[in-house]
Length: 67
Image (cartoon, rainbow, N blue to C red; front, top):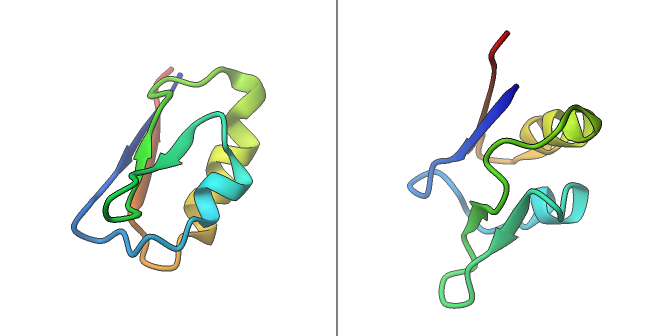
């Protein structure tokens, strides 16, 4: 199982994660910061979640996997 978190202190609002995995990430209206809308996505979303984390310019996304 994947667990995802976005550190709002590191997020710069680039929106890359939302473009890559819109079913998992969204952005706030007021500051444009990313947040997780699906904290435990299914295995079919794993590739896009990892890609979003790698693409984050500030490294604000943490992805952990439980067995």
